[in-house]
View (cartoon, rainbow, N blue to C red):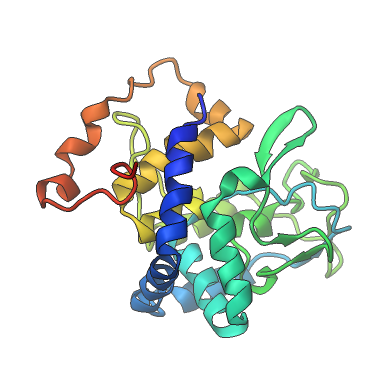
Length: 256
């Protein structure tokens, strides 16, 4: 899957013209979402064992999260972050290509909330489910990372059925979209996808996911290339969308 550098450039141009409007859209979307599902999400997170690690940051790459988790993070940022830090976050989200790194033999999109200087997760209290379960002691007696330890001893083993049950309750309160026509809808996308979904539209965010976010990440590329039956993307896919039918103008694609 090839990175669409032309689309990336158009986003860069659009961001320079409309930065304040994009910032406002990000904040307004999560404010309008309200607290729906937030208490439930926090209670589910509390059911997981608390852990600590060496803060090496090797696992701090962009991971897929649910829309409910996205709003939880943004609402926390609204309360806790100063305006200038928030502006830096939006600038970084608009340029995911600047956070690509090579980890081992893989291309990875580094997590937007990882501060490599201080080795701190800037949203640790509301970090998503995928971050919380990484390194937990599984039924086979193993962890994904041997630098992760349970804070409370003895270490608590978590079963796949337990984790699946928690995730099911989260996705029931989250949005889903179909990244590739004919491949089925999914509930979890990188933070950047949800960001673009709320400043542009679901259709535009899906294009950015396919043509920018997936090519920037070896795991995402491998995920979607694992099937030999991926339908070829059609240029007219968006022409039948509700956005086009309503007469709304695309926010990116028509820029010079």
